[in-house]
Length: 257
Image (tube, rainbow, N blue to C red; front, side, top):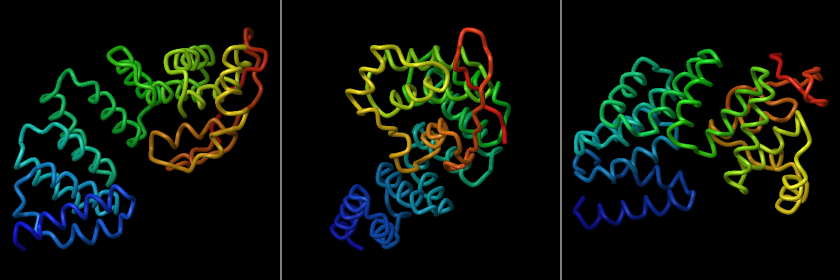
């Protein structure tokens, strides 16, 4: 394959992937000899194509090749850790996590990566909460703020859950995680008049959690504010029952099935 043909196929692969034509992107990726490619960004894109196709061994090979071409690329190490999580190799994931922390000790993504590993391993909810609280101290990110609120809900920390939802709503004011925070809060107490007005104006009172398609890991938990969801990839089962907790007249608590 000459340089012109390679560039043409690479551009076609990127376009197909961007347009959601993942099968075509995968076929185009298979037609390229990636071992001859020196550009780390192109190799990362090929890794993303294979990862989307759930060809994790091929994706790992692409990321490792990219790492060889760009040994200081912490993004590549992060992706390698995520792949290790996907295939259940948590020891390898932790090794990549430690390498990521060594390369980027101040990057808040180290908390996200650690949380993903602990969650996949089934570590205690208390440990998962602590990681997200540490992340919040360094950087306040909407997706993980909601995740933290939901974990408070799971362990029955009603006050912390409501406060976290209120803070998320105040900080962001729009978007799917703000909506989910509103719906999570309503399991405990009514929205404030201002929040209810915002909810009605943006969503017309609809339950957008039920309208959203099931998506990737961070989003799957957000759908669990409904009364029955499953635990992995939108299969987390929650059951809500009344509980008297003083300051909340309509307080509800997560219980395991």
